[in-house]
Image (cartoon, rainbow, N blue to C red):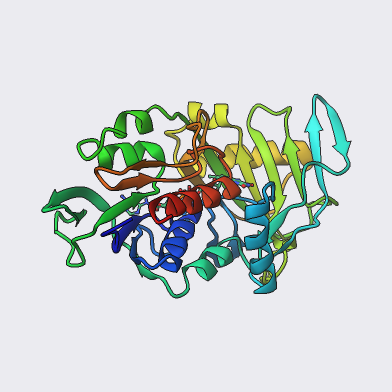
Length: 332
Ligand SMILES: Cc1cc2nc3c(=O)[nH]c(=O)nc-3n(C[C@H](O)[C@H](O)[C@H](O)COP(=O)(O)OP(=O)(O)OC[C@H]3O[C@@H](n4cnc5c(N)ncnc54)[C@H](O)[C@@H]3O)c2cc1C
């Protein structure tokens, strides 16, 4: 597209990183702005004195050829690897013990290894929350939380990849797309990060828990590839609460939410957990429940694009493919 030289990408999750890389490969000069300290978004790894925990996306799988070639490159670069850990499901009082779903991949050392790899060589400005966009003489200017016009300003186009409620707020007076963006609904997810000082006795690596009112997923983080061992910690578990429970108790303090989820874990395991450390994390926007039916939106007049897992497919793959597709539409 003529005149599309400088592009700002807001958000350094999988969608933003994929879009920025592809735009760069097609000749654009791209700057990413990310409100957190590093890239990854919901592909997140929390570091603690008790070891690392993937508290967002647990793994990803591959359903499209387009994504497969990227995953192969990440595996070749040593930042992603298959996760062969045994995964079972608890369902209506039964244990389903067999292959569940497609092959799973994880980041080596932590899920966010993939995001850090994708961010290499990109111009990434972290700890910068964009709160307002203004347009003058056909160029977009970005304003950060302090109300300051960012020095790096004057973009031909802006791509926003934040979860849709945040994207809609940012874009409400910038593009007619804002109403459609605001129609996407979300579920939250409370997460408990549990370090144990004694073995739990569990022989599987992960479980879908379909028959508990609180616990929905449990996964042994320390069994994933490349996770460092920590003295005094024998197992590290990531426990996700069910969406319904998370919504009902969204305003709990993180410690209280983690406590209830860990209790549900102990009940499932059939013995009290020997807790070395327990913390909670609230994902207010964890999963889009009614994503858009197209992989991105592009307002050619306003030169604003949006991408993310809430456009089409609410998974790591969906976010990545959405970002790529938007870049291809912007610079065919
Ligand atoms: C608990 C949980 C478990 C999950 N498990 C899986 C799984 O097992 N497998 C799977 O495939 N998927 C899973 N997912 C979904 C997966 O994580 C997402 O689909 C994917 O990571 C979304 O990527 P994204 O780039 O669209 O959005 P995000 O990762 O949310 O990225 C958006 C980025 O924008 C930044 N941002 C927001 N507002 C601003 C602003 N104003 N200024 C600057 N930056 C801003 C955010 O900080 C964030 O980094 C899970 C998600 C959660 C929360």
